[in-house]
Image (cartoon, rainbow, N blue to C red; front, side, top):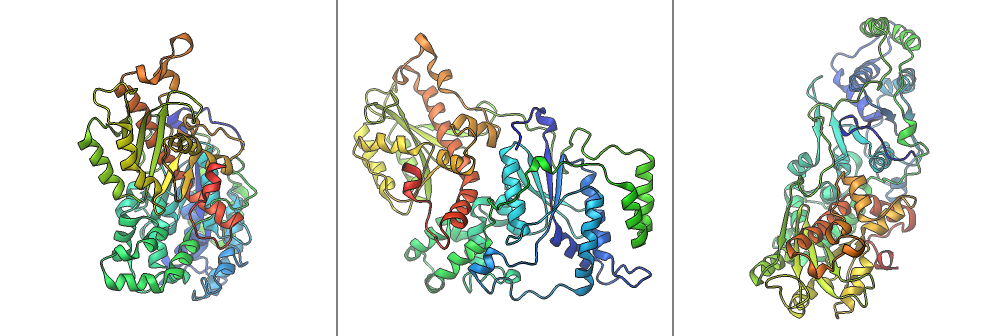
Amino acid sequence: MSGKRNKPPQARERLFLLDGMALAYRSYFSFISRPLVNSRGENTSAIFGFVNTLMKILDEKPDHIAVVFDTKEPTFRHVMYQPYKATREKMPEDLSGQIDLLKEVVRAFNVPCVELPGYEADDVMGTLARRAEAEGIETYLVTGDKDFMQLISPNVKMYRPGKRGDDWELLDEKAVKDKFGVTPALVIDVLGLTGDKSDNVPGVAGIGEKTAIPLVQRFGPIERILENIQRIPQAGVKQKLSEHREEALLSKKLVTIDTLAPVKVDPDQLVAKPPDYARLKKLFTDLEFRSLVTKLSDAAARGARPVGSEAAKPAPGEDSGGATTDISTDEHSYRLVKNRDDFNELLKNLKKSPAFVFDTETTGTDPLRAELVGLSIAVRPREAWYIPVGPGAKAPASLPLEEVLNKLSPFFTDPAIRKVGQNIKYDMLVLASHGVRIEGPLFDTMVASYLLRPDSRHNLDALASEHLKYRMISYDELTGTGKERRDLREIEVEKVSDYSAQDADITLRLSELSWPPMWSFLLYRFLPGWSSPVSRSMSVT
């Protein structure tokens, strides 16, 4: 894969990935009452509808594009659960007969067709989307399948066809929250509870979205819900979860898109190219697509530019922004804990959260010798607290270190709460030197970055810039350099608060991006059948 892009933000490269079979089905059934049949008696509805969809996408002037297809071979999900998709009706013969020719038409547009035996199109699209995201390329998943909502992020969106020709919908993180009431990372937990009849994913019998969504909102992932069954007030829901816990865990695995599939092409190889007009005209003439032959001839006569040669324009609903943000332009709420009331407010928020980020600020790089100046904690994106501690912190009324650690300790030792950090081993050693143990599942964004892309940079500034388009306050900006460098205890506490709270907040945002691919990486590469959270050893060794 190539390095970073040099285009200005308003002309960022964009990748469109089309869900081939899903769009073919959609096109076929949209003409089901009046199918398109040529003079040879061949049904061409799927091809005609698909071509119109593809041409609409090409009008968006993508830089990169591919159509991704399923294969006939069983996937790893069939190995995991034999009845997977067993209840699906066989593809209609007059649709299956169009697929090879449809692929030929796609290739005549000079659009790559991508497929991978043993994996679904979802996995291939998810893998390419995450690779593109790492390269700073915006990705649009052209599909109507709600399962893809788990992949949505600031740089990955769904472009969903509507029931009519023009009512397409662009789905972002807000749309996912509106639909499921949770972040994209937790969509798999809602789907794991509800199941999916069309794919024969069992879920938990008797639990639909109205029950599943509040459970996930309250407890978080399915694993945590199952750990807290006794805290669920409804007796019937308790019983269903107790009786079907294995189905819930299995279903979550089945609906999780593998974003680390061994796809042999990268986004840079999916460059949009001009269509082969002569080949397309021959195919359209043979298919008797007279209107498309006319449209194609008009485009060729105009000397249409190669697809993607113009500056990329945003998809419908998107503006042309995208400039890098920083603390001065990014919406956030960072709170300096000045007294016990502020601290108690933080503790209340921790009690409601299935996970939190923590970060320590110290006087040096040796975790066993450095003095602790403060801690920052984040439980939600764009919201974090900074607690200055002890007499060393330059704060008008910092809380005693012993009191702070004593009250935070139950959260650090709670085995049901996931602790997240960037280079978390350092912070754990700092707290260990003050008698605080960290127990339960851990997630380290630095380690996740290394495992997913070992050849990239893994420091927080680099990860924030690459994945969030966010410029961090650097340590040098805060403390100065060389002879001018100041000890953290000498710097205004408000500045240290912004710096530290930002670290925790950005780590949380990165964890929401990296948790799904990291989970997939572990589950399908190293630990088949394993359903525990990320292990402690991964983060601290």
